Length: 105
Image (cartoon, rainbow, N blue to C red; front, side, top):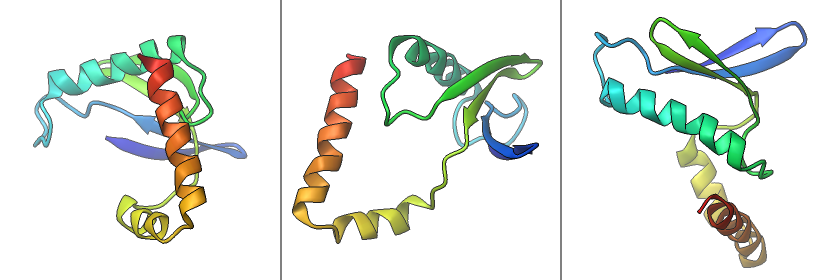
């Protein structure tokens, strides 16, 4: 489950696996493995398109990933605006995404 948390003048994005007994949209154990994978990604890549993973905190319900806050919006709205961009800008964004995927493989 994601959370936005202010700490002093900064804001952080927290990602947890939720609770094992909560109504789920994703299998809890799989969610835990995704959070642990975030640490491996942090060690492997510092690509500018990846949010900065500041810390991973052990909690009774599994890892808690603490990320730098990045302003954003729901994907549906962003997708519509993205599709309306000039082709050159779309290609630039896709080049960055392909570069990130290449770096992670």
